[in-house]
Image (cartoon, rainbow, N blue to C red; front, side):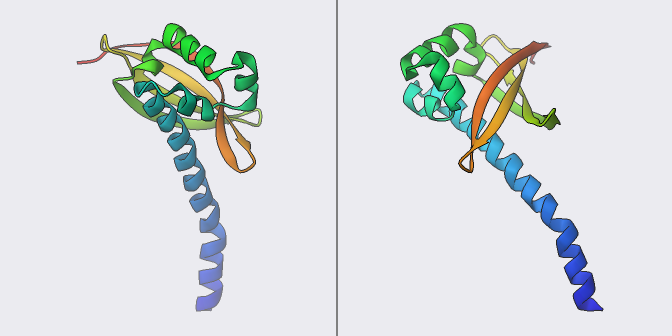
Length: 134
């Protein structure tokens, strides 16, 4: 009986462990890209982008200029908070609250794709301004 209970516990618990590992990996990719932008290492930041994004911008330098000019809160985040990870139509979207140097918080959705077992950022969507921090 103990073996049956242990087996059932493992069968039902495994998906939770796998989900936690997935969530941690996705957050690690996004955090890694934030860290690379802070260090102005566009080559490293580029490595977290999907082939689709890389194809759009063609070079790490083009990609870096787009982020610096279009997403300054991502280029120089002062605070980040991971919110919900959700599945929409078969795509995983990680919501992130990002603080900028003015003390303003922004909501961003990161579309994530898995390529050859590695998570990559496939899109970033600006959602709304949340407000001013204290």
